[in-house]
Amino acid sequence: MQHRRTFLEHVAQYAAPEDRPHLDCLFQGLVRAVGEIVYRMARVGLLNLDGRAGGVNASGDDVKKLDLIANDILIDHVGGSAAVAYVGSEENEEPIACPEGGEGPYVFLIDPLDGSSNIDANVGVGTIFSILRVKQNAASAQDHFLQKGTEQVASGYVLYGPGTLLVYTLGNGTNGFTYDETTRSFGHSHEDIRTPDRGDIYSINEGYSYRWIPEVARYVNHVKVPRDGRTPPSARYIGSMVSDVHRTLLYGGIFLYPEDQENERGKLRLLYEGNPLAFLAEQAGGAATDGRRRILDIQPKELHERVPLIIGSSRDVAMYGEFREGKR
Ligand code: AHM
Ligand code: MG
Image 1: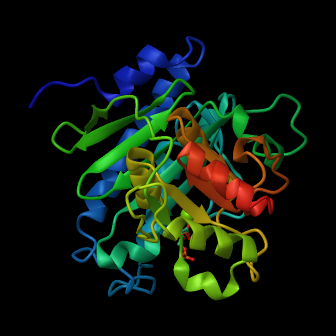
Image 2: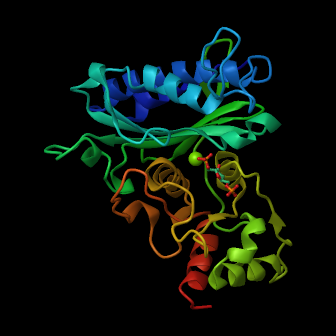
Image 3: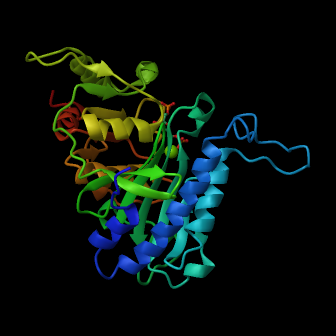
């Protein structure tokens, strides 16, 4: 196999000099954590890590589901690095203070296993991460996390699919790497990902159409009809957002998880899902909004706050905005 630049080499080349040693330390922990998750992911049915887990095994030990195991692995390996002062996770109510990284420059945010309800069906799932700097004069641990997405030092996801991919940005483009279990490293496989400015795929849970707000219904009805001699659109909704967003970044189109008549903020979390994916999308030339505002400009008020998320090709996201604002 051709030798490719590794993920850690890429970070060393493109991170700002003051961040380089700290990011290297953090990402070494991430690569180790991914190795452990991949090992288990490939053996879910053999290690009793599927939906049947969650009780007590024959030895009386707690059997944890893979999303909780992934959470523990990431907290151990990344939270255990000297670069990380706090970890915030979709799985934990409160921020976790990291003794090793008490003086570390970063807070690390994770959705440890997004789409985990799909694991039993062997569908691709993902880990989403975001890195912020610790705040000077923070009033509380939570205060470190309540920063706009524009403040992210880096973000990314790991997609556990037929291959394991890591896609990340430091704010100078979006790049993808493929995991090689034999060397336990990621090789550069997707250089400078660019999302087409328009796409032919829309991705939304149509099962919720009974509770859509009228603006969403009008938009979806509009995109379904081929216009201007363009390719007829295709619907694709895996229900595992990292897979859906990864496809959208590569092929173009739009992914929508909007607010609806039952959930006025939608489902997805601003800090653990919205911000990191929005940073990646923008760095690939795409866009991400809540329908009205750029995701990265939203000032978070709570650690687990939810946000409508519309992400993908810039022209498609802009057109959704026109429908959402009632202009069309
Ligand atoms: P999770 O973080 O609890 O896994 O929820 C997020 C997931 C996304 O991966 C996916 O896009 C969405 O939930 C699917 O939700 P729904 O079944 O409501 O369409
Ligand atoms: Mg999630």
